[in-house]
Amino acid sequence: MEKLIINFTPTGMIPTKAMTQHVPISVSEIVEDVHKACDLGITMVHLHARDEITGKPTYKKEIYAQIIEGIRKFAPELVLCVSLSGRDFTELEQRGDPLFLEGALKPDMGSLTLSSLNFNATASINSPKMVQDLATIMLDKGIVPELEVFDIGMLNYAKYLIRKKLLQPPFYFNLLLGNIACSQANLLHAGVLLNDLPIDALWSFAGIGKDQLKMNSLSIAIGGGVRVGIEDNIWYDTSRTKLATNLELLKRVKSLAETNSRELMTSQEFRKRMKFEVGNGNYGRTS
Image (tube, rainbow, N blue to C red):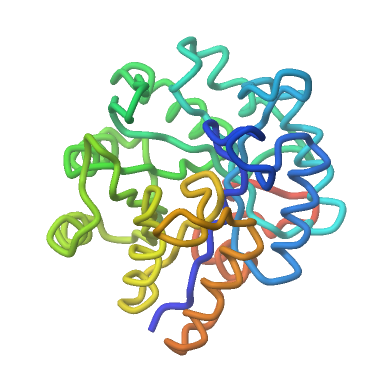
C-alpha cells in the first residue's frame, strides 16, 4: 500500500481566536505548531498567513517569508505550500504575491483551487483566467500547484489544464469533501472523484468540519493521504464539545495510520515522487 501523505493545515482563513484559542495566527505560533507537527511526523504543510495585528488573512509575501524562514531553520526538507486563496483577494498581484519568494524562501507548492465555489457564507472566486494565470506563474517559477478539488467539475478542468500543458505530471490533489455546495462526504462522491483522477496523481482526502475524521479514516483505510488540521475543523469530536489542538488531530491520524499499517511518506520521499528539488536550500520542481 502507498505510504501515507500527511498534509498538515494548521491555520486556514476562517478560524479566529474567538472561535478557538488553539488556532495559530502569529508567525511564531504557526512556526511553533509546525515544529511540533514535524516532531510527530508529517509530509508537508499547507500555510496561510495572517496579519499579526488584525488576525485577518494576508497575501503578503513578507509575512510568508517570515513563516517559511522560521520553519526551514528546523525542517529544511519539509515540503511547504503557500495559499493562493480566492476567498478574500481578487487581484492576481495579490493572490500570486507569495510565488515571488526566491532562494531559501521559495515555496515548493502553491494552492490552486480549480473553479469558483460557495462556502456557507462566502464565495471563493476562481475565474478561468485567474486559475490559468496562477498556473502559468507557477510553471514559470518551478512551483508546483497543490490542486484543490471540491467537486467533479474541478477534476475535469484539471484535465483541461493538463491538455493545455499548464499542469505537468506528477500531480498532487487535495480532494475536499463535505462543503455545503460541493461533493459530500460519502462513499459515492469519494469514489467518483477517485475514479476521475488523472494518471501520475498522488492524492489526499480532506473532510470539512465534522467530516474531517470520517474522510481521514476512509483515506487511510483505502491507501490515500490525508489533509488534517484546524483549518478544516476546529473540533476534536463530532458532537462539538471539545476544541481540538493541531497536535491532537495529528496524533489521532497517526494512531489510525498505525492501526492500518500505513507508514508515513517522508518529505524526502514525497520530493522524489513529485520530482522536486531535494530541499536544504533548493526548493520547487527540478527543471
